[in-house]
Length: 383
Image (cartoon, rainbow, N blue to C red):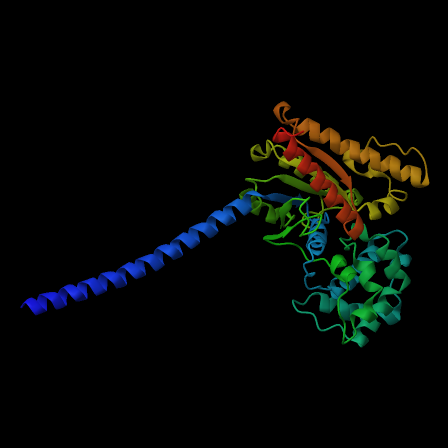
């Protein structure tokens, strides 16, 4: 009996040792998890949240792609919607030929109508065939037709993407069997953003200590995507609002009765008044300046209701600058009209941008970084 008792005590001690060892291991794992959580929490405190907002087609997703590249991340896959562009141009020429007084300028050459019908049919499909050399040749033939060129000149009335001409002029390279997208191809490619995408980056380089680390969020700009914005509004360091200043004579993709600039004005006003942005910095990117400077010499600013009191002041480059400063002032006035008195001390900066210009966008992000770091130093009482 005594020997049995001793044996049982030995087993108990052995089990206790095993349990003790298991507990120690579990405690060590728990401590390691807690340590990592603490480290990640500290790291998160040093990451500032930037929210990229704007109406559809404002160029904000191109800005996002530029930020991705600045951080050394590879560009995403390029998607060339060649049939969309050809379809819009062909259908647009038919519409203009039917409705315009001088309709002959938009009548397609008889030998090109079959190509137009073929591409229009492809444009209506969910899946496009691969862009072969033969198909590229047909698209190029249609593209060079005088009626299509006349139609392209009125592309802003037809929801023709800004990138159409770029891809039409690079068809043969794009159709090569060994085609590899260039950086420019990716920047010019247009696919509407749905949902939320994010990237972590540093405007001054990932390994330099002088700059901050930012988490940049891009969300769809079309009306049906904006309901997804709200849950991102908390804890934002700065809102980067993109406004395409070249689109003062265009209408929305989702509502052809609504002028794009008027939509941008109303959207900016709404964002400014959100309660959660009481202390949030605002960076306004007046984007697509490259298109604006060409258009404003041909299409007067006052075709837009918001700019109806604009009077041209000069010609050439001076007129471009005059028009730009007018638009800039209108946005400044809107900012201060829409900002409550207790919010006037939040940071507000305006930048002239061309989303396709990598050097300019990189420089702009560095300026944004400097502005936000100065704000942080000021709030900490170090300035």
